[in-house]
Image (tube, one colour):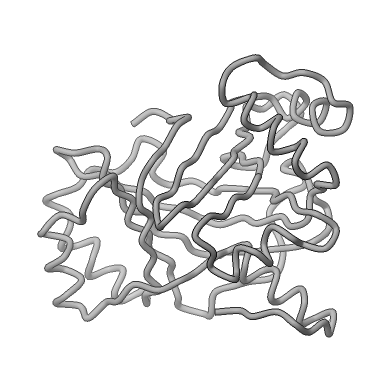
Length: 238
């Protein structure tokens, strides 16, 4: 499995326990293959307006929503290859566009307005940045991920995220992995990513384990904790 830069898929989330994770991994063993980058620590920096307009709108569960983030696999250096990602969701379908750049190039683009490319993805990111000229880095999110794909259909993917940490300072992919936990002890966030439907074998595993989908946003939960800690009201968090 290589990195993709364009996605169109459904992303279905489940909050599960460690014992449920072990059961799922055991039962899906005959159907899946570990991703080439299967075990990794992912770091993200999310961008938003000064009044957190993007995440506030997202938590209202609109028909259409969008966000911008940069991502690295492991702690980055200025010369590391990282991703700038524009993620949109419309009527439950996730559309993701991303560019592979160095951390240095991203800093020059964001801070100095230096042109990064003239490809379609770059033009979409440029348009988004122009729509929200006050965008700034707001939250750093990191987590340990283990990823798999269906052996005969790599478009169906399963990921398990643990140790989800957030902070609203040291907003750089180069600063390290630390922050406040989002998940409760023993919890795991599982995501099923598919371009169509969930295969029957996975549906049977979910049914047997009485595992039900949930609505869960990492950045949304970080924002809710941030607002609570700052004693600010007026936010709905599911």
